[in-house]
Image (tube, rainbow over all chains, first blue to last red; front, side, top):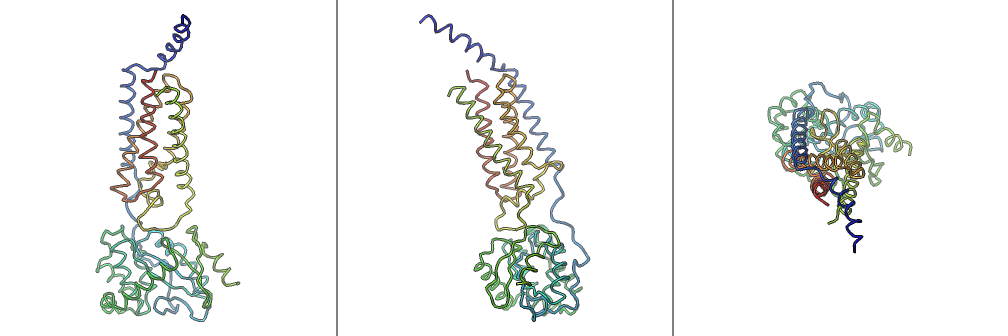
Length: 246
Length: 135
């Protein structure tokens, strides 16, 4: 029994040495609060940019002279079709449109090797719906691809009301061969609603998880998914070359 | 709860923090997804303007903090205990800020970020704080 204090005393002394004084704790936590406030203030002051990239007045790609038929871009004679699911408010879709799509057009669509099909989705909100209706309406005049390219190029912050009639009209007026008043009227039509519903149903059936999503269809075969893992201009080259060689 | 148990728990939680922040750091740099998904998610949160401070990803700051706390818990001197608790407290406050950003500003929830902000950071702050008074 007499041994207990002898054993415990050094241990208690050691534990007591690991306890900081009350003053030290208050000082340390005061510094911690100051550090946290400084960190948060720095984070707020130095945050990168604000919203999407600024609009561009120059089209990212030249589509002149390429056949269009509704949602299709390119020759109907080829057996390879690249299907794109996109939401006009999706920043990655915009990046694809500006960084990858021009290469796809120049190397595959313009030479008539691949046909492109646009399946527009509108899951990001009201501005997606509005933009998609105009794009599909332009498609009724075979000018869908110019309209979607122009809207991507002028994409605003998500659901900020950026798809204004004025913006759409100014972009549409730059597209040769597009009857702007007819496009505005068609945007509210049942035909456009049907096109949007069809693409949504196709996306659901294909289990599309997000946008942009791509599929390749060879002839009448079932389309198969291809993955876009980067926004490098050559990102789709391997998949398209593989489809063309197969 | 004995100090040994508190120390073990703090070490394990700090290790979990290293794991979560390590995954988020990897996800930030891997850039494997170029997909917009409904309802947002880790991609939205990590692509947001709040994901970096002066060019340093927030996930990297978190990883550095958890590694430091883990070392301090293992070191276990008076100063190390105090430093661990203070750093964990800074982490707790910053996690609360990140939580508010996700819920009310970015309006997208990243499950790994939430795990950090709601579970790991508070638990570590409590455990390291308790060790300042444990016998």
